[in-house]
Length: 183
Image (tube, rainbow, N blue to C red; front, side, top):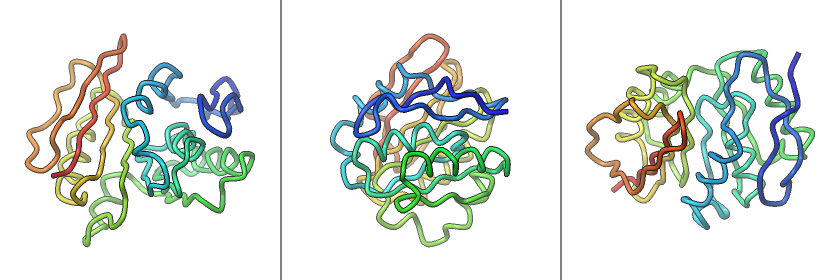
């Protein structure tokens, strides 16, 4: 049974509760606030992707703060069901697409790049090599200027990338954030 302890932090739906599936480690409020402070107005009217979406907390936060649309990529059917319920409760189904797929496989299927996507949000399992695989794929697929925000364990080093350059990184307790931009 999902719990409802997670909230949208800012924007039009700030303060609204989100359902959180069991077994999911959602981005905490301080991290969401930090992400969107780092991204600033770059979220406005942008198309975004929420990889490893879980409850959809990051992508929903982007929608609440003015993103035009968000594609949520989540592999688990039950978790994707909770995500859809969150989108429906907030009235965001018309601005969202939920793709039930493993994130790196979904990225591999995007052979022609990510098009007009301006923001990619990643919150994969901590200390999992899937972060490196996803970033290497994004390094190849992102158009110039795309922002990529990765939440990860502080001791987990980011891979060597050719097009994604790190703009900022911050540590918040047992979490770290990296903001990268495609050249």
